[in-house]
Image (cartoon, rainbow, N blue to C red; front, side, top):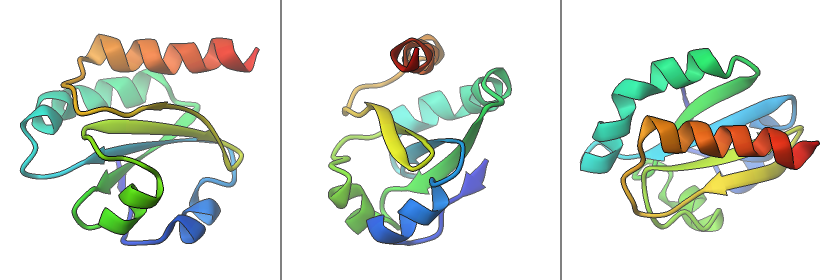
Length: 110
């Protein structure tokens, strides 16, 4: 998974402008992030139409605040620069919950 360097929300627009992008906000100290991380390669493989990008919340604290990401792990989906969904809260997420969220994006777009 690609790692997002430190950037602002304005810079992020360039990163998410083309195709489908999934931002995965986490931090090294977060036990719930560590819980979902082993499932991420499988999730990435199941959704090849998305480019998954890891965002270190601590390194990008200003970006997280600008995007109203106050709980981790969290996911924000973009399509061609427009946010199409978010799974943002402080709860532990299972592989099934993340898959359900991504699957719901497809139905919203139809």
